[in-house]
Image 1: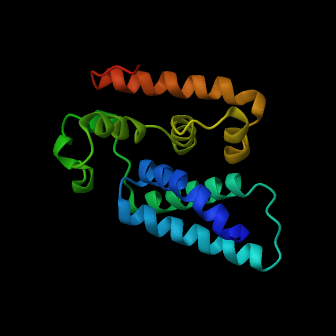
Image 2: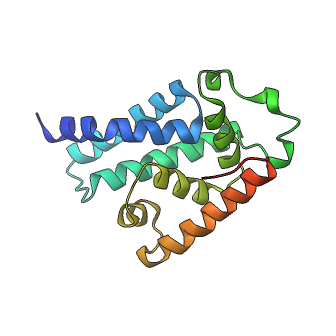
Length: 163
C-alpha cells in the first residue's frame, strides 16, 4: 500500500464525520472530501512536502466546508429556532432528534468556534486542534472552554441541556 492510500484510508472516516457536522449533507461532504484528497494528491505528487498530512487534511476540509456554507448561506440564527422547526433539512430526517438540536446550536456559533467544537467532539487532542485551527496551543483550553460555555448557553435558550 502506498503512502497516499494509507493516508486516505486512515483519514477519510474522520474527515467525513467532520464534513457532515459542518455541512449537514452527505453528498456535499463526499464531494468536499473528493476535492480535498485530489488536491492533496496533486500537491504531494508535484513534490510539495506536507509535514503533517492529517492536520493539513483537516484544515483543507474545514476551509472547503466553510466556503461552501458561505455560498449556500446555511447559517440560521438561534432566535429563529422556534419559527423554523420545519426547516430542518430532509437529509437530517434519519438523524436522531438530539443530533438535530446540536446541529442547530452549532449553526449559531461563528466558524472558528464551530470548528473547535467539532474537532473536540471528534476527540482530537489540544495539540492536534492547535495545528489544525492555527490557535496557539496555550490558548486552546481557554478558547475551547469559552466555546463550550457559549454552546451551552445557546442550548439553554433552546430549552435543552448540554452534558
